[in-house]
Amino acid sequence: MEQVSSPKESRNEQTNGLKMLRAMVSIGALCGLLIVLTFEGSEPRINTLRAEALKKAVFKVLPPTASIQGFGFNGDIFVKTDNESEVVLYAGYNDSNELSGLAIIAQSQGYADIIKILYGYDIENQKVVGFHVLESKETPGLGDKIEKDPEFLENFKSLDATINLTDKALINQVVTVKSGTKQNSWEIDGITGATISSRAIGDAINKSLQNMGAIIQVHKENFELNE
Amino acid sequence: MSNTTGHIETQSTNEFLKGLWKDNPVFVQVLGMCPVLAVSNTAMNALAMGAATAFVLLMSNILVSILRNVIPKEVRIASYILIIATFVTITDYAIQAISVELHKSLGAFISLIVVNCLILSRAEAFASKNSVLKSIQDALGMGLGFVFALFCLGAVREILGNGSIFGAAIFPDNFQPWIVMILPAGGFFTLALWLLIFNGLKMKKSKA
Image (cartoon, rainbow over the protein chains, first blue to last red):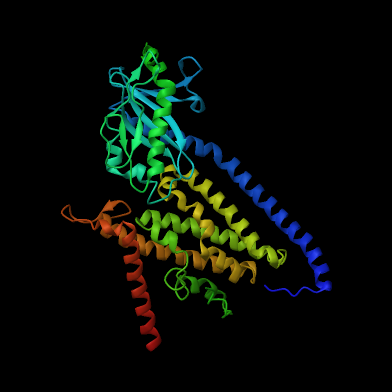
């Protein structure tokens, strides 16, 4: 697209510039409108599907569980809620209505975008017992190993997360270490080639337990089913 | 890249058929290799990705063709990208609304449809120069050709790499899956195999 610029043509370009601007702006507006319409139209259904997938994930990260109840956080304690958008964690109950564990939603910045995860927490033994990625846009083949790598997932079968109640913090911070160097039960063995993504998981769990772990331990009885 | 623009067919069916076979976007034009190699590890993923791409191709071809006399040629590429990106976003929402699982398994590749050179090349080489009707035929042909090619790869890789097709096991239990076929390397092997077959057929035809 080579253009010879003579005085006459440069005037032509001027009008062209306006024309270009008009064309781009109107195409942009049209495209924006289309996207907004689709978003509005599909949002309710996407939300229902997401909520269903979330519930399925809750059963996956907890030990055998028969029923679940969502809990929101009001600033001081956890309160039962059925409003999906307020839920920060789910409590799971076994057949005899005893608490089987908590499934907690956590998130952290990954490589591409925020990674949203759900992890299972055993209140009695103060351990992370399962983990599931809810939302991630990590690089296929590299960062998305956090969902598939069996050795990485092994880390979350029994991850130490004991709370010191006087400090209201974790005794040992949950941390992702370099692949193959895990020595303590509170460390997560990272993935080579997915360093940032695997760190983000450790970070998400750590942050979430630092914030809520002590409150969960102090107000354990809040999660019991009382009928 | 656009060896297809030279010949303008008179019969309308040719616009449709050329994409399926003679100018197949994958086996002949070798376009859009990123999704072809990456998402063809199972037949279902391949079909879904192919369908999503074909939908974006169809919609953007229609819009580009409608607007072909309005878009100044200096900003045409930017306009095409804008149009393509819009339909990719719409497709992204649509797939989420259909199935969260499917959306998860296609992952970041849905957004990457924006830079699939097949779509941009059809907009630039065909839709911007032809009527809406012809552009629809062209997009349907190329889109189905793309789905067909992806399915060819996905089916072979899933059968050999996982011993199943559409998730249903087809081999007896003692079949040892060739793990390499569902890994990235398997994509290259399978693509090479199909290119070999296609070119073999073509050479035979031209000799006869």
